[in-house]
Length: 223
Ligand SMILES: Nc1ncnc2c1ncn2[C@@H]1O[C@H](COP(=O)(O)OP(=O)(O)OP(=O)(O)O)[C@@H](O)[C@H]1O
Image (tube, rainbow, N blue to C red; front, side, top):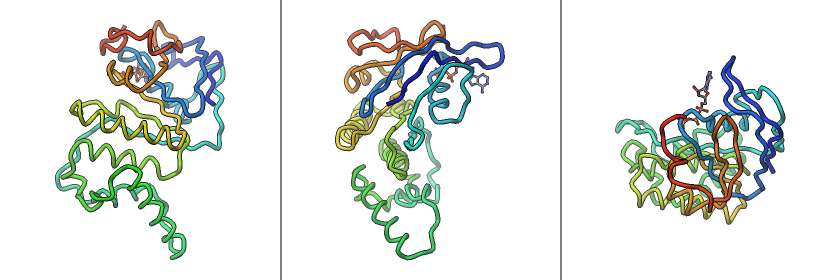
């Protein structure tokens, strides 16, 4: 479980959020929703230990590994790695044949889980947007994470491709009880795939039921 108790974050004099209290249960699939600049990325960075909190507490099992899937960015056509090589980038280089055999098994298993086995030799630069995002997803699974953070990972993809990626994430969430934290400006996807949201508004963060989200909460403009 992840728990925030009176969490507060400031950058110098600028308050990002305060009085933040919420719990995220193991295996939950939850949206992070709010206007630009409301602090979604900042919260995720605090969870990942990349940014310090200014006050309060964030309780998270330190042994848990976190996987991170970034927003879609195009990759040059002549990018030198194929999908499998790209997924392997996060592995530590090992010399022992036994360890390398285990790594190969692990990579094959992950390519299978993310439905990339057939595509593993496709150069990443030539892969479609959805395939590139699946490759990022596969890479994020290498360290056997219990928590997966999707940082607007579906933005800029076609509607159908977004759904395919989310279906795959949902499958991983259910099969492996992965906790999924989905930062999004997409009302439809949030409604379809998650049951609760953390809503960032008025310099705080409130847990709400997905039945209580409305489209204006997802607008891009800052408040
Ligand atoms: N390293 C930093 N130093 C100073 N201010 C920062 C830093 N990182 C973020 N901020 C500020 O903190 C606020 C929250 O930013 P954050 O990126 O967390 O918002 P967000 O909700 O993720 O926005 P978006 O939806 O646009 O991605 C913004 O005002 C931002 O300018």
